[in-house]
Picture 1: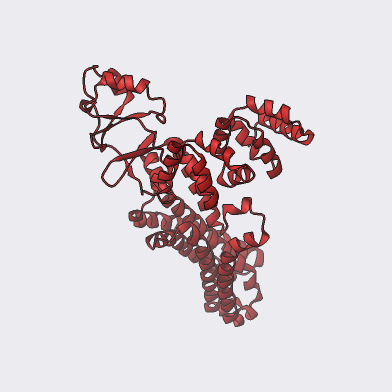
Picture 2: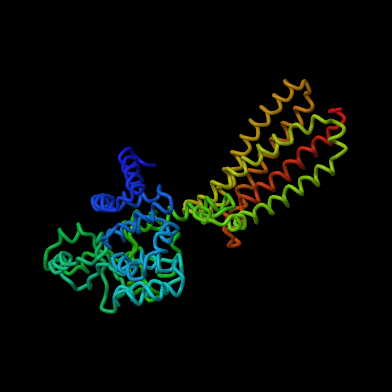
Length: 451
């Protein structure tokens, strides 16, 4: 969302682009905060965004702007820039941000850019790229503030003042002579400690840390769980390798949440900037075929109960009602569980507690929905038996859907299949098939009362 100030800025930027007033726009960009420039670029079309970004002269500002943008937009902005300019921009970035951008480039172009960067910066980026994607090692920053355990409080404060390259000093990490992480000291505790006391006397030895190969989603869960501003990253020998700060964790949470939403819809974020209609179609098609199979089964069931449908044609009118109510409850349950598993608020061991709670909810919702649906059919169609069939069908369908919607994400998670991808399409089709089967089965059993 754009506030009134940014709306006016956006209008001004577009007007200057139409006039090709490069000088005026360049001067305007110099006065804006990089985060505002990034926000404006998101609302410009591809041609306008490239034109605007190319006018940012300061490499440091350009680096900050890119750090605020999504990878898809970044790749578009960089595709026409020469390698020298790109290397200058990447050198001004934190190593973890630079590594992420380099990883999205074609291999040959990435190698050329790394060669153009200064040795220290390129070495840091290459070291981060050696870790698997979406792990703590890939997103950590190697610039952190750590002191040996025998450092005095006075020496620590002096070194802290001189630590201009350290990334956001929230905590002081304490290491031994082999660079193993042994403790942590808060800034408050350091300040109130007597100057001659070694920091090992005031450090906390119970340090929450992650290893370089820990999945980034797990890192985000730990930071959120323990309310940390930064978390240290260590290797298998507990040697400190870097830190992950809360700003990176916020990006991870947003990225993972967005990815889960797209997956549950059977699509991908690639669609946002994808130009090829065929490519977009290929992203969505697998889930279309999955739905075709499910609805095909539904048609087989309808054919099986053909005599029932021909005997009382009004039965057909309420098939969508039974399917929709069951499907909605199932999707609600699976959404709660999938999101809980993704954020760490629900764990695999919680399955019976969650199932019991969702079953009670399904029981109550099924009872209310069944009573209301049954009464409406009875009153409007003057057919108590049909109302009873619809009411019972809704009650059973909603209860089964609540249970299946709860269990399915746990099962997929247990099988190491992403619940966000598989649970939604499976539950939707399962509920349709089961809902029709229940409804027509009950209708067939009570056929003599319906005719």
